[in-house]
Length: 242
Ligand SMILES: [Zn+2]
Ligand SMILES: [Zn+2]
Image (cartoon, rainbow, N blue to C red; front, side):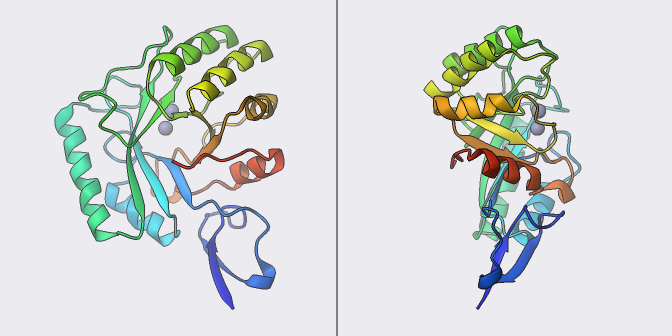
C-alpha cells in the first residue's frame, strides 16, 4: 500500500513524500501553514502562486496573512485593497476546493496594548495574528501582549519572541496566562529563531495551544516547518486547530 503524506520533517522543501506504510514517518504530519504573506503586502508571491504551491505540497489549510497600513510590513492598505485580495482568495477557493484557504491579517500590537487599525476592522478576517514588531524588553513585551490579549481579538500571537531583547520568566507567566484565558495560540514561527524555550513548556502547562507558520515571503518558503514540527514533538506541545 502506498501512502502519500506531506511531511515537513523529512524533506528540506516540505514537499510531499511517498512512503510505504511500513516506513511511515515518525514525525506528526502537519498539513497546514497559518502564516503566508502575499504580494498584497511584502511578499513576492501572488495569491495564485501561494495556492498552487500549497496544493502541490498537499496542505489542507493555509492562511493568507498580510500586513495592512499602518502595520509594519505593509506597503498599502484601505478597504479597496482588502476587498481586491478577498476576491482573489474567493476565486482560488472556487478553483481549488480541495484546500481550505483562510483570509487573514497580521496586525501590530502597539506598546500600549492596542492593536494597529485596519480598514474595515478585524472581524472581516477568518484569522488574525497579533505581533510585536518593535524591539522590546521583557517588561514592555509582557505589558503590551497581555493588554492586547485581554482587550483585542486575535487568534495567534505571532513570532512571540521575535523582537524580545530580554526575557524574564515572571513576565512569561503573565503572557501565557493572558493567552490561555483568551484562547490565543502561541506561534512557532519559521522565520525567527526560537529562544527561551522554557516559555513554551510553561505556556503548555498554563493551557496554551500552539500553531505553526512559515511566515513565508516567497513561494518556496511555504510549508517549511521542519524545525517547528520537531520542537513541538520534542516538547509535546498541543496544537490548535483553526
Ligand atoms: Zn511579523
Ligand atoms: Zn509575518
